[in-house]
Image (cartoon, rainbow, N blue to C red):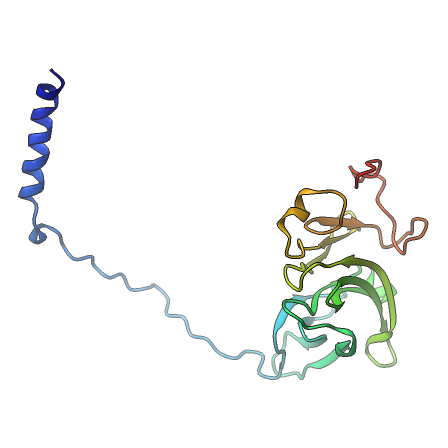
Length: 224
């Protein structure tokens, strides 16, 4: 009975397949884009090799800052006719193995008054570092000698090192740490890798150059 039930449908499908041929399939009509795009080197005066991040200080100026993996932060203006200049050079302390290097930048929400900015970089093949630097008004640039190390994160590999920094609306610094090349790191609380870290850079906890926010959901977790 099952064979007799499906036979008419199977026969109809076979007829339909044989009735189709290439002549029945029309060629697709090409659609021209509404706007033709053209590219130009808008910031011709900006020289930044291997850029990994671009930031604004929100200090009332039209300056932008581009971070290069090799260890240089370059300051430039949104007006392309103006020259760029080196804002911070820490090439002497940046490790470039694998995907390491200078990887992130964030300006303090009160940068206009305190001159603090924060960077994420790898000083060697075994760790990542989050440091605070200060603006030097007399040099009109960041001061390499002003470094205050806030945090170091041990690394197992020279890849997946993260590096994104961002201040939230709560005033805390958010850090994307990367899993360090081991995907299991993001599944555990006993290390700082593979996580989004949130710290208070305006205060300090005992033994730290930063404070852990009181509403951290893992603050009382002994495994974290």
